[in-house]
Image (tube, rainbow, N blue to C red; front, side, top):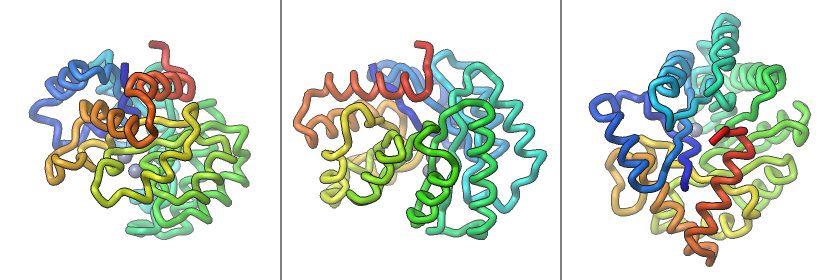
Length: 256
Ligand SMILES: [Zn+2]
Ligand SMILES: [Zn+2]
């Protein structure tokens, strides 16, 4: 069994064939999908999908891009949404100083609010971090990690950042960008991740694997991702499937 621990099936890219996409995932052994919230609206949609499809779990949160529109009312609604039994994490939240669609100080303030919510609700966090490593690590240290739990999604850092994330107790999740031809550096880092901290995700509709670039990504591609990672780490597909499923079940407390 495989789990896509991070995708966005609520996005309009899937409006025409969502059910088929979930079926196609199942047929490839991707039996469960975590639909990650990226705004208040997307968090509502994620919870709705989790109610409609037994295979779908949800997380709720606001992406750092949208931190500028944050209000306390948003936080209250996200908190209410987080009480749904199929909501298994707070996220994706974090910092994105690459695109800087919201001011850095505002991103930090909103990020801390969601860490606070995760503490209050005793839920793990799904982190987005781009071009903001130092601030990200500083905030986590100040916000009582490694006592808390979380996953660094779409890991794309170097060895040092990996070490720091592991020291803070984080899980580390890889996407289909490890299948790209120019992913040598990332593949070297991937080899260093302990088997009990590794997770898989597509971030669909983004980041289609090599051979499918330019097309919409889908959860069924976790199979190809697991095959690629097995080769890179010189282990069997079965070992990767087993380990990453156990890890996701443990971090998110999935009752499956
Ligand atoms: Zn992200
Ligand atoms: Zn995402």
